Each structure stands twice: as C-alpha cells, then as structure tokens.
Length: 397
Image (spheres, rainbow, N blue to C red):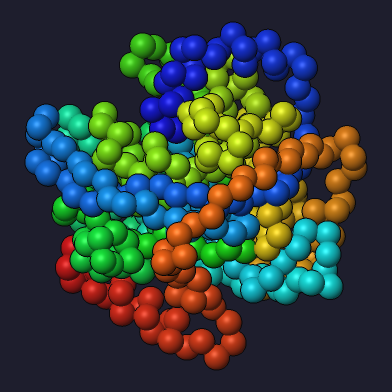
C-alpha cells in the first residue's frame, strides 16, 4: 500500500509467483509474539506543502512497547478496490487471550457502519481528493457517498459503494483532532484537511462484511494495482501527513510507525489470494517486504466475505474469515474464542514473530488514547464527547 509495493511488484514478482506454488489456502492466519519495544520519528513540520519545494522535518524518537506495538497505537482503516463494503465494526476489550476465556472479557463495539441500513456510529469516511502536491500527493477530504469523490461534509457510503481498481478511501473515528502540533495528540498534520483520530487500543478487533469482485475494466498502464483489492491498517499519523510521499520525511512510515495488511492481493499473478503482512521492524530490516504469513485466504469474487482481525492482550494476531462473524454491540469472550477454535488444523496457518531486545529511555512516555475510545456501562461522557466533536467538525469544515 505504501511506495514499497511498487518495488515489490517490480523486483519480487518472480519470487512471489514461484512461492505461490508451495503456499495453500487457509481460513485463519495467526501471528504470535506480536509486539516489541522500538521507536519511530514523527513528522514535526511540513513546509510549502503544495509545491515541488515541499520539505518535511522529523523529530526525536517516539518509543512504543507492549503487545501488538506499534499497531497498538491509533490506526486508520484503508480500503482499495475493486471492493464493496457492507459492514464495518471496531471493538475493544479490557483483556482477551486467544484460546483462554478465563482470562478474557467481552468485546464492546466502539464504531460501526452498515451500508444497507445507512446507520453508523463513530466513523468518518475520508478520501484523497483534495489539493494535489508533487511531494505529498492529494490531501484528505471528506468522502462522498461513492467513497472517492470529495464532499464538503461527512457522509456515509451509499449502499451501492463498489470502488474500482486503484481507488481508495479511509475510515477514521468521528473524534476530531486538536490543532496540528507536536504537543497535541494527533501530532503535526497537513494544513486544511479534516483531521480525526484513528482507532486505538492494545486489545482490539476490526470486523468487515465486504465484497471483492473481479475488476470489469480493461487493464492498462494507468493502473498501479489492477484488480488488487486490499484492506489494511496504518498508523493514523501517516494519512494525515502523506500516505504516498516522494520524501520519506513526510511520513512516519519509513521509520516504522506501523502498518498491518489484513486482506491484500499482493500481485497480479495471485489475484485471488489475500495475504496478511506486518510492515514493522520486528525481526526484519526490509520494511517494504515486511513479515508475511506463509499462507493466504482465498478471495471470493462472486459473493460477500465476513471476517476480520483480532489483536489480543498477549501478542496474538488472528486474521479470519467466517460466515458466523457477529457484528453485535457486545461479543462475549466465549463466542469469539469458540469461533476462532472452530477451524480444523488444515484451515489455520501460524507464524511466530521474532523477539526483539530493546529498552526505551526511562524518561520516555507514550500517551495512550484507550480511555478515549473505551465504551461501556455508565460511560455517558463517550456519547457526549463524540456528539460534540461531530457538531464542531460540521461547523469548522
């Protein structure tokens, strides 16, 4: 999804094609030992953003640690066509361990969207349809109901929201960012964009009901990702500055702030294979290649798919597809663990990430927005806060 995919497609196509002969389809892909202590350099200034003289500066290291780190930080959710989104949901839990219900709590739904009923909560659809910069690319704007056109105000995707190859949009929460500043929670971001927080929690889950039909347009040189749909997560600082910059300093991506590809077609020879990949420095120096699961999930091109990804409290990340996926307001630990344990051995593939030894400076602390998005009984302030921020953004933008 970042510029690294261009290099992968050019330099690694043969290896990926050859490897495909030895890789099989699964219904569940697991990663264990996820999360490490590391750092990245955030963007601290963006100068001349709309000209070819645009330059960006980065600051001192931001350190992260713990299970799922750095994906435990706030992330935005990205979609590339051909794709149609029917439902989306984001959950968190105070504690959850895959395979151990005794040490797990229920999951609370914190964000939701249903295209058929045109209902949603705590979601904002943004797309790259703003001012174009030679260095930063197009700026974020509110997405129209088609997902790719610009809108003056926030809107839900229409029920018929199929996007085509190369077209993309992003989901953020509806909690507005404070003023762009290194001292504030969203950091520095591109001037003039509608800026929102992503979704943050150490223990979190994203669920989707989606379709990835075969592209009907003819292929051509104008496409970068022809018939290569994807759903992925990025550290939310990346799209607020630049998702595809020509200057690496204009995004924290190159320094390792975090990307996880949930369902991604990697190349044109495997258009019906959806891979899952960590683009972090946990045991690999080539951030572009990342750490990819050795098995794939089959892409259904003629119907809908349900599933998602779970990041538990102990370093397990599970990507799955299942017709039994629930989008209820609350999902019990039993329900989810029963679902994740229902796959046969030949339907699951597991990858263990490397253990990284590093120690963050004792004076370094990283703010955690978990409380901001934790919703549960008695937390009426959550609804008041999200309502007020929604009203504020309507007035300001």
